[in-house]
Amino acid sequence: DADLITLDEGYCNTGSCRSAITYIDGEKGILCHRGIPIEELAEHSDFIETAFLIIYGHLPSESERDVFSELLTDNAALHTTMRRHYAAFPERAHPMAILSAMINALSAHDRPKIDPGDDATFEKYAANLMSKVRTIAAGSYKTSIGQPLIYPRSDLLYAENFLHMMFSVPYHEYELKPEMVKALDLFWLLHADHEQNCSTSTVRMVASGEANLYAACSAGVVALWGSRHGGANTGVIQMLQHMRREKISPEDFVRTVKDRSSSVRLMGFGHRVYRSVDPRARILKQAAEDLLAALDVVDPLLELAQELAEVALADDYFIERRLYPNVDFYSGIILRALGIPLNMFTVMFAIGRMPGWIANWREIHNNPKTRIYRPRQIYTGEVGRSWRPIEER
Ligand code: SDX
Image (cartoon, rainbow, N blue to C red; front, side, top):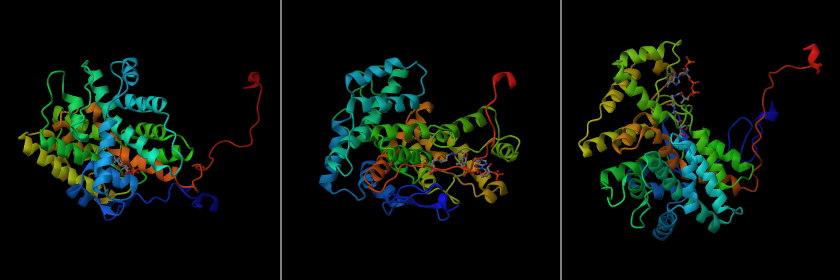
């Protein structure tokens, strides 16, 4: 139906859109941000530089990078009234609920009014949001374990400051190991953007209605939460822990997955776009191995994950459906080695994805041709009915 395939600026009713931020070739396993392959960024860049590239479209000059980094450092602390919100959550509140609520609370504090094309104002709020999501996340963890919130330090860079706010305690600074900081920075770099995934499309849809930057990113957080999307990194570890606890071999687990009546999925496998290995999975697998070796730590779940992948990748069920490891299959191993609690894994994904959501909001907000997203539907309900009095129903 021609009506369903008209490609409006910004969004097409069939669910595709125009964007200049990230390119994926699912057949070849290619992922580029602003034209630069993820492999080159993973090897030569870092999360802050890649975030700048994704948001502004070019690699920063030295002065641009310094300004961006300083804005992130200067905006890390939460206002006292923001910190009071933690007390309103029940003790067992899920950190993704806290993160999405606190980002909206932040919009009440900051009132981020940004006119299209006003990059000076945008830069202030974008850096503020990107900086504070770390502090909010660390604060939700501290609150959940009954420890006092730890202030960010002005002498620490992005990933260092997060680990400090997560694991330092009063009068005892957390020992920042370079290999852990590097692994966390790479984890976030690899999650920074990924074309029109579920949560980024949500951000674009909310942005098309002219909601503010923070509100749109808060919507991205809740879209990411689900087990099919950002919740999968948690699901992978729970799957591996279940296999170890119940002494289920990779062969037996794959057999269960293939049994269509079981509805059990191999978490961390499969992707709507990739029909080959997710390039991020390949890099994360190596990073997980390198981190464990550097820490001289053996995680039995990594070994089990490798065995499980080997069995699955040799099985026709997965080969025929072109199901390969995705970004979530090995990422949890890194988070475990960093000491991140399991219920914070998806929050870690959200912190990494923030630059991508911010960039997509900006692309929609600055495009004068943007129209409100308004998907159409194929109506499958009843027709030709009339109202009847209740005594006749
Ligand atoms: C992310 O979009 C993005 O870019 C997302 C993301 C990003 O960076 O934003 O890459 C991040 O969300 C990665 C995906 C994380 N989710 C998981 O790992 C959960 C497990 N994977 C699946 O649930 C699934 O693969 C999806 C949700 C990722 C993709 O689902 P699709 O494309 O809708 O595929 P499908 O559900 O239609 O499955 C096609 C077939 C089905 O079998 P048949 O009906 O043909 O017999 O493949 C099977 C499915 O049963 N299948 C799986 C499977 N994934 C698909 N079978 C077992 N285990 C799996 N993981």
